[in-house]
Image (cartoon, rainbow over all chains, first blue to last red; front, side, top):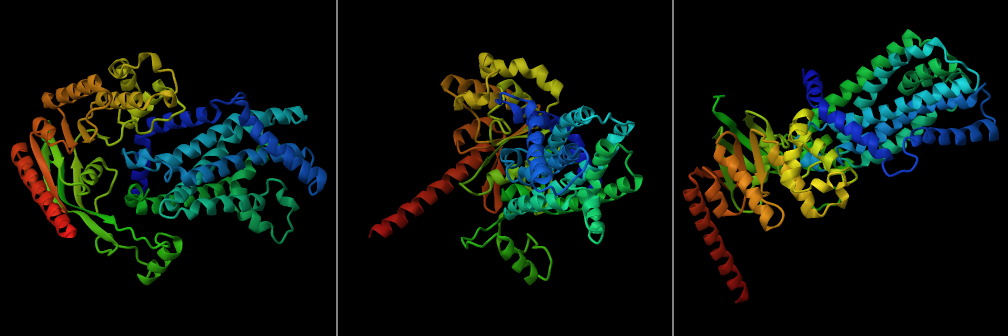
Length: 261
Length: 271
């Protein structure tokens, strides 16, 4: 019941969420000369560095079209890391929106996750175009891209909400999240493929929710296959678990949030 | 709830945390230690010794169309009461029921973003105060005209003077026309001429007797003139909820007593 009421409240505030997301997206590029180009330049620069280090200098991975593999993994990862890093601070730094007027506090992490999702969507055509550029014509599998998005969206909302709630009484959480996200990056097959991991460790890495949620994108855009239904199902299960946990913790502590900011 | 009641407060208790100066208070470590000491149960705000009552078992009804003043000394929970009614704070016990759209005027321009233009901020601020996109667009011209900022609406808010910022915030709030408006000290902004305009807008709202307004203010004259009833808070209870003349007179006597006590105490110190 609480769960339903929680999302009903979000739905009632959809106009505000829409306006804040639009503002967030516009905000990121306002005053910068290159504007929207940054959406693409950010992952491209990361791509250049990782490509140089892992493929050229360390020669740790040898995959055909390694840069493309990296890129299609980095895009959803940046969505994840952006949502968690900024989401953790969203309520604690919500200021007058939380302490001076009434809006349901869960609106703020929702806005962070959605605006990072928007950046992800904006950069997606670059991945498809880049694939075509290296000679991999997009397969029909990219039509299934929307199938992999809802689970990631719900998962990130749950986790961001959890971090945002806990960061109000304990500011330590923001630093914790930053560090965990960095470690998590290297535990997720983004710079290396899942197959390159020793067989003993593979189940562990495969169980990692980030692997489950990001791999479908790599599969559709890089391997050019339709996503595996089993993987999508596991992703959906992770999403529900994260969402339930986030909402329950939030609903338990929400009465104190405005007072403790 | 009867139809003519806008706000009903029943047995409301609000407790605040007592902040200690101990450096580790509030850290994960102290919280964990206390949590383990309680045997894993969450702290009950009603019995937690680290909390004190700001308001205890407060009940009252406010009728639709009524204008009510809230007075009391500094720090007695007047703003806390407004925030509970607005839904910003949760009641630790009791219940607050409101009828109609509530908007709190505790800070002007809540959610204004400095990098965005006046026009964009009016939209978001209006939505925060409970308007739909269309309603904001319909009222936009009136909002700008009232704020006298027509030629600045496409400039980022960060270029506004603080007076301009307040004028715009006030204008959005007054044009949002919520059925329940909670005002915390912000009755007028800007220069003398603009302040008169603000007061006229508030009087118009109050006199229409259509909507409900709650005003927290230390300006007792103003409270007496604007309100139909006045709530006097003597923490943690409501001491009086009566006609303005009586409540204000009672509060003035209280203030005078207090001033005399302070004078006597400082005289004693000098000796």
